[in-house]
Amino acid sequence: MYQKIGAASAAGMTGGLAFTGVNALWLLLAGFALLAAGTALLRILPRVRKHSL
Image: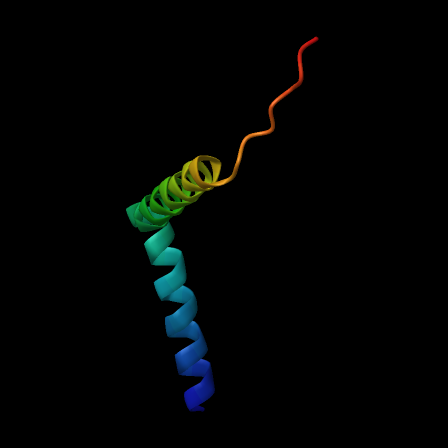
């Protein structure tokens, strides 16, 4: 009896957040964090230099 109420309220909460734009905000934040991590790795890793003749 209680499992049906919990599942219905969880499904309603998840669907409600999709329409408020909260998911888009988290996706934007995650994208920024990945971009920052990528640029940090590019700054830390040594660069490969080509030998010119």
